[in-house]
Length: 219
Image (cartoon, rainbow, N blue to C red):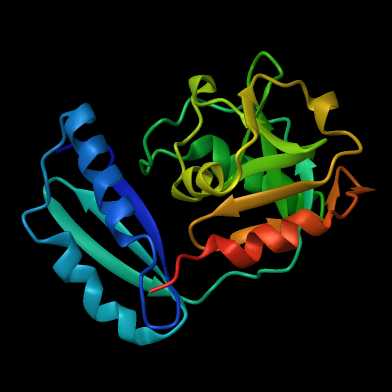
């Protein structure tokens, strides 16, 4: 049996699963690249009935050729207070169940009475949050960590790259975030401003709210 499985976490919104095809494509790609058996069930057919649940979160796990679906309520969507975790980021190019560094960073945030945590690589580069990608405004465009750092190729990350013409992807030290307007994004929450980082309020930017309105595809 495989020591781990693959996960896709999907949003049900207004009776639809907005990014279903993208989730299925990423799942299939990861199964192939990792040499794991495909699900014996039709995953699309398995999740589509849950679109009738209203606003919710679906967690699909594929392990040893079997797919399972669990449903939970939406998380809080308010701007979170975030800390920089001391727990170093481990490469996470596929959305697997091996998430120890993220779980440890999340516990670190709880101890600090924060809502969430941002992880850095061993070299000190900004990586990703426990379940999200970080972006920040830099003049007339955005910056975000590059995929070659080993971060997850997020569904929401790709959506932001579609919506914003000027996005610089690279390796940035923690100091690059200071004084910048930050937001997080994932396929469940959409785009959410970050309220504070390590106790320092994050400045707001009206472009974040405008981008959040365009995030969810229509139809």
